[in-house]
Length: 262
Image (tube, rainbow, N blue to C red; front, side, top):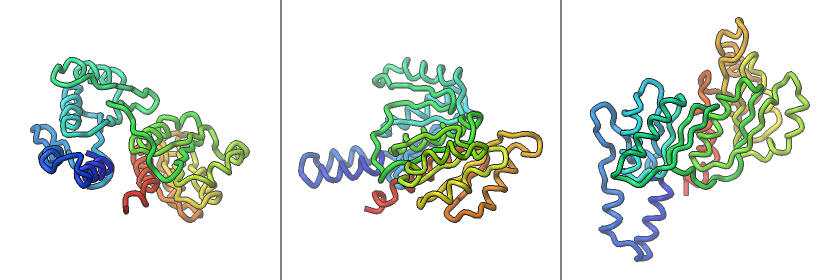
């Protein structure tokens, strides 16, 4: 259950449209389900405002499908599975479809981001727009992971792709959009310069995400990571190499910051 869903439920109790007993049934489930190989967290959305996400790498299709089912049964409206390949995603969707105990769940696989979305993405509920900008087309895998993560958390996302510093005019054509953003995720490999440039153009937080894209001396993203950590632009924070999920998550928290405090 998401925090917004809990707020709505409490409002229905206050208005008398939902009984106290019914509300208790909805929120009274165990905080987690002990499945032996996993313990899905059913109350993470209530505590943090963002429900649990499944890291798909290293898990079997059967394990993923079982965790998804447990989260859905626990009241989670949609489930994000990251770092999952197309074959495994197909197997997960087939396993969920074969389960006669629940209604069919929409399954949407996003190949570029290697993300499976089970259920429908929520409508935007944040303060504004998150901009996800990536330096080159080779960085799309990480940028799309960030964008889809933020969308799954209820943020409106604008995508700016192939706007790296090798052709600065491509980025400057979108300055107005950047200046209106509630947060910017700047994804780049090679020398990792894009976040510093964006940080000097906008008033919002910039989350820098280095990718492992680049030639030998880029050291699989280490050069970009160090460059971003040493950015001279104020307001730039940095996530780990190729961690588009973490960047999108952080941006969505910023986008919902005032709402979360209400």
